[in-house]
Image 1 (cartoon, rainbow, N blue to C red):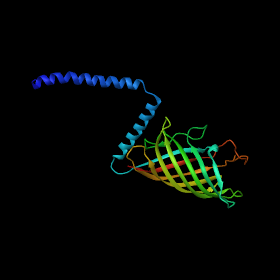
Image 2 (image 1 turned 90 degrees about the horizontal axis):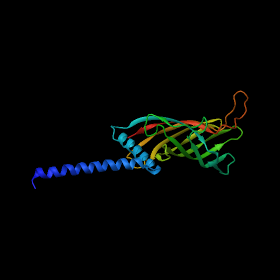
Image 3 (image 1 turned 90 degrees about the vertical axis):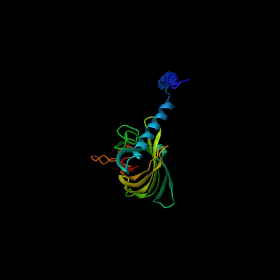
Image 4 (image 1 turned 135 degrees about the vertical axis):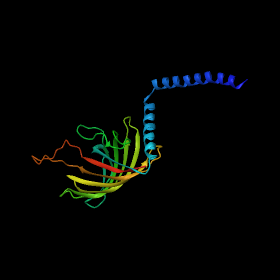
Length: 222
């Protein structure tokens, strides 16, 4: 068979193959299940990270989010000294809870519009007379997308200092898990967390306000 004849046969075959491929894609999209949505969300997040990682040099970013404490997750241990305690289980959430929590606001697409679940282990001294608190803190910070999939995990260590009326928390963090994306990220997280809130006009404790705080995350990724 001559070359021209081969080309005439191959062209229709390729067209049919391409048509079948596009038709198959349309049918697959029409039958998406929640698992498919989660998978595509992770792929999208990974693509976003990969694109950022290919840029020249590290990219700076900032982010802010409000988080509140889940009472049911709190487990503390008395370390023997009357003022020395250890929080061995504590979880903070940013998922909207009345006026508390809310989505991350950030100039990094991977973080912007996501939620946070933050697990803490804290060694601290607490004076119940003055309400002063200070200690060291280790956190695992999970960034969660709209379908509940973790897209980034940060490992953070630092200190807290202040009182139950408001303590500053300062930590350094690094990206611990990037879920398949080639990414290096590091930075700082800082904020003020309030365990007890008072009504300034009456001086009474506001019992319906969960312990909460607003945190600022900053750093670089590449």
